[in-house]
Image 1 (tube, one colour):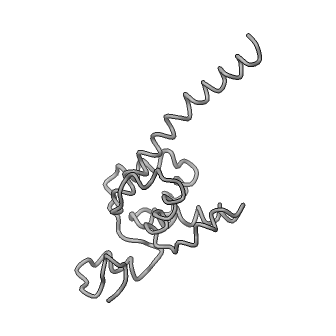
Image 2 (cartoon, helix red, strand yellow):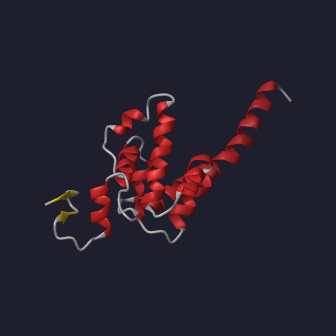
Image 3 (tube, one colour):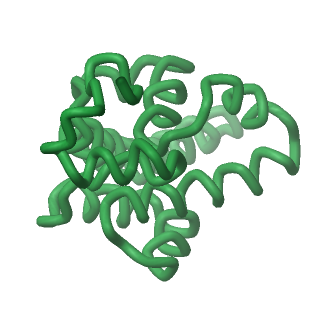
Length: 145
């Protein structure tokens, strides 16, 4: 077998391993987005999915730039995963799972019975979302009236 044939075989094996993991992760994120009140397809659009992720966790849009800075992005990803797990009522142990084994923990978050409790990163929105009968809060504009 030639070197090209070995390279192609190795790439096919890697594709066969990682493609199903990728699909499972996308399905899990689809369900997480649906639970948070967004459309599932929004998780597959690059950059836009990051903006929706920031809305789910209650952080401003400009955080998307922080995800582009090397080393800083790891810190903010862990922080974002922590707010995501808190938004669904999970603890720090779940955050560690989301960071280290996201292809397992994202589908768990999507398919488990955990309900979205509001954007944890914004305390006012988080409290208002938990108290949905609050007449002072406009959910269309995400602000107090």
